[in-house]
Length: 259
Image 1 (spheres, rainbow, N blue to C red):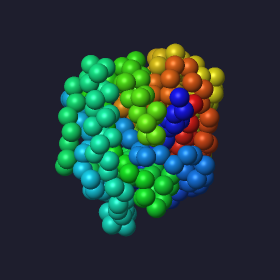
Image 2: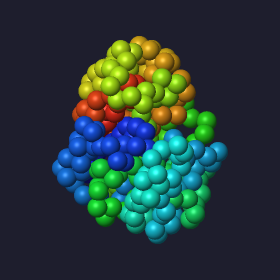
Image 3: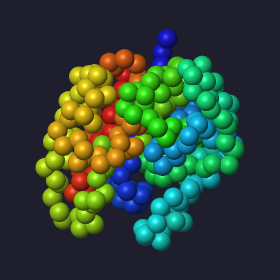
Image 4: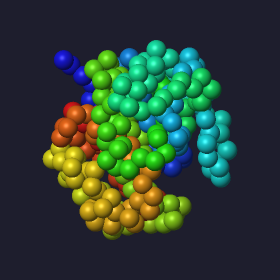
């Protein structure tokens, strides 16, 4: 049976919406090359709930869930339609795997969804819905969460885990002239190698065994979407690296296409 690949995307800072850089160009090219999906399912750390929820609005709103950025960012909209029927299928798949889930007709698209999708599908003409990330996930349960969503990939849904390959905001640098931190480079290379080899066991253990893991991710929530995307792709599916470089000194912007 044919199935769509799954995607992990580093969504960076909200300013990525206006500053595409290398990562934005790569996502735009990827969007042109992928088979057109019926819908995009996004899991983002910016929507975490105790029980799973899925957006069921026919026209989800653009959520500006950030503060302190350029005024222009708050005027942007990503008017993609939703897909309530496929959102319900995602909930059904998760329930069959033991997760408790509910439809949410009010929640819109957070910046972990709409910011990278502005580059991947700039015309906003592919339906989008979000599935929330359970609040108590670790990397192993995030991988199982992705496995539960895997049947959607066989129904022409592009499953996207949107996070950040590195995410230490304590060391975030506004000055674009700063060089990339060595620890972020080393951690990113380690993950890239595990992805290319299809070594999902290493990915699941990355926050314990990868070099500089705790500095790259002081908290885990932006790494977990990578485990979700890998799990949704199928056990040990290799991934292709979509090189996005490093911005603000510490934010590695690589994305990975699995399967």
